[in-house]
Length: 534
Image (cartoon, rainbow, N blue to C red; front, top):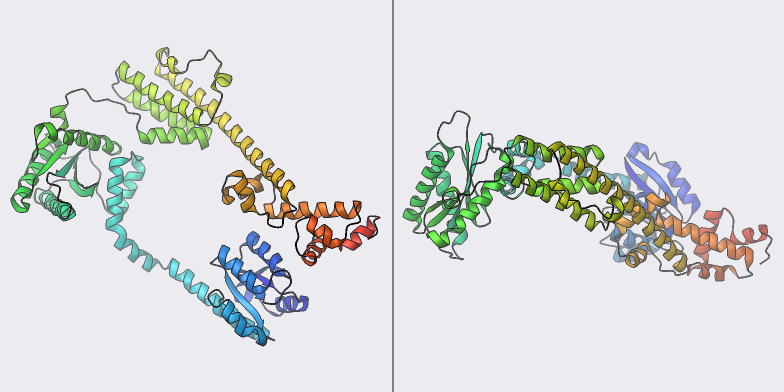
């Protein structure tokens, strides 16, 4: 059902058209009727109709001005113009690019129905085109290689949840199930800008051929001008993953040098046992590649050969940090508890040294305190001036005690941020109302002017204004102006046109129209009923 607004300054036309046509039968719902362009524009902004049927000649704002405003703000809205023969040529020239259909006055219900059906059919066709599953599938199929490359690259740069990784892998036809994983990266030793991309694709093709020939469980793709080889160990595979990488990477290196007359250096990361930890292996492969400055080009470099220090068993990575910060700022209490529990489950499951454990706790606490600092919270007021949260990491007697304390700190910060956000909303709305009271007499006051003064976006402002006041800004401004006008009518001898100017209307007739519609009587009637004589 398409939503429609009917606009005409003649009441008999509005009522006649609305009653003579079986709107629902033709797939339309008349949301509202307006008798001038200004009123119609307010309705369009509030109701967001699919179609506007409007006359041209109307007071306060004509149909062409309305069409221009609607097309500028809501380009998807369809516009049907009602016009007389003497206006038709002018209408065609003025709004040729903006109008969907014309109906010449005088018109019958049948003629308007024919036009409505045309517009509806076009909207139906466009909707069907958007929803055509076959077209979408074809478009998706063509985009699949690009989406696959983007997904594989994301595995190296972001630690995604395991469920999301496996779901995406299935969707893109990527096999990622394995007991172990190892990442290597191949870098061209000679940087020929004009040939670099061609050579990278050639190296990628050679690597893919070697994976297929050796029946390895591997994936090859491009990322940041590097060729990435991801090997995984399947459940029934007895051969060590490092040995597999040694064999295939060395064969790729020799083949590239033989057939492309260029050399590559290969950096090999560490073996990891969880697909979510691929960024660690990739990072280590990059560290290994850095050693070519010492060891030379055209070789394989394993990070475990050049850096023998023990690896950390727990890491506070980007994903964990992001989830913790998100929950503190915008999550629910159960979500926060789940995130903290996951952080400490990594500690409980791993063989963690006390040194690594304290560093891990320090990273968690630092993230929490940074979140509080960015929210401009008074930590002394929340936890006491003598509290030293970072120092607490050395005083916990158990992991459970540390876990409970972290939850307690996060909960207090979460509540304080939520409270502060509500205060911020109220402060912004109060400032907007104050600005409106100071400037309602200005004809050009608008939501954009208010937002410019508050330095916020109109979309954000509209949502919080309606949430706090239960009304829109446009409605609030109208109500304020009408209340001020009633006050002036009761307490002064000003003429109606003078009162109109005092409350922000340049057109006294439009003020009178709005006043009658809002108050239910004319300005003169209101004054007389209030005991004032004009």
